[in-house]
Length: 513
Image 1 (cartoon, rainbow, N blue to C red):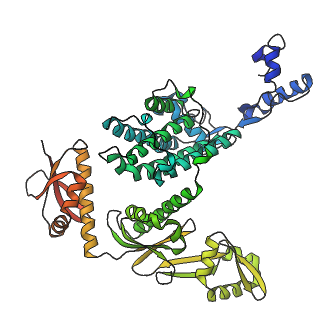
Image 2: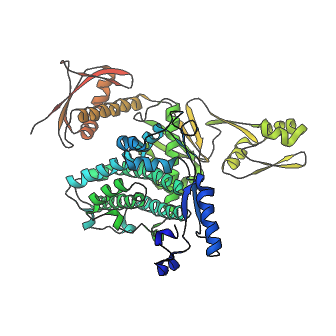
Image 3: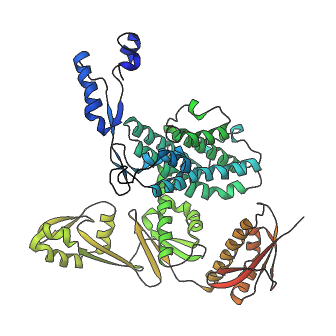
């Protein structure tokens, strides 16, 4: 390259004139003198210009401790062994994912395993889920089409996110930054497609009738999966080929066109609303975890910032379902639930203010802590008068402490907060037992190898707490588990289960009809 490959100047002069100089050249950093320099020196002498427009220099691959691989150290990795264990796709994806090509790459087999699980496993799981229901319903989503404007907001959100992903991926590829490319694709598949869209859409797939809503979820999932296969194709060609051909029946993903962004399908407001809800749900879950309240245990209230009420009020049912909470309150006065304290971050404020740092601390102690915290956590600066000197406060200058009052737990992040009510009434506790009961039954159905629509009988060992919960929520439990009967039993062969601290035994029997 660029002369010998065309046997120039002996032949192919016409091709050479069109293709010279090359768009880019890629080689290892050890070729700086031997290859990059030699080419440019020869071309400058012969052609009076550079033989390539761009240079992509990939750095060395090191071991996980950052040491250069060598046989004497015994830290080399056999790539063919990695291919056999994990596949060529996973190895290729991992090397692109772990660091930019122009930075030293620390190879860690544990990181390769993580990529295999988090990305490849997730893509396959989403495809398998989609294919299971499409085959069960004998549906080919390419045979019908619901207009995007007529699809539910959840569908329009994932379609908008996907088109923004396409835009970002193409921009990153145009500057040869494949590290950003594969990270963006993986994050989309994990966080947006699998952990939110598919999980939020499960009940839509379960619907018995082929409604417009069910058509929409089939159309959307089909389009996103096919698009992900196409985006992935240059980096994980075998996975992409398998998913794309199985979905579309076409000859090859590598004969299809690479996705292009459809600006008309990008809706920033829809993304803003749904992304805000996602972030609030993450914070709410963090509060539950901190308070040691399981997700299946209902709670009474969650308080969120009142300034978002107009934007997401109609999405309250989604927040309720995700966080298993009875009431969402848009809160305008936080002093009832949280204590705030502001102190200087002395490591930053000390060198900056010198002797005035003590005065700064006393002024902060008297200031409106909530007002300052709200402003700086939204990324703005708060102007504070320090004896005639205006100090512009940001989160680097401040040591911010936020704590929940008794009976509440607060989580902050993403310039947001959530406050959950941690007080559990007897009614809430009973519902928690019922939901935990349902979860154990569903897991036992799976372990027993029951089909999706098999009807069952549930037997369980009696206890005052579980009896009360089952009696109160019997119809709900039956509906969720496809049970025709729930009965107390003391027979042998019961499987030991723990329902929110209550030990019991459970057994399932399939009902043959």
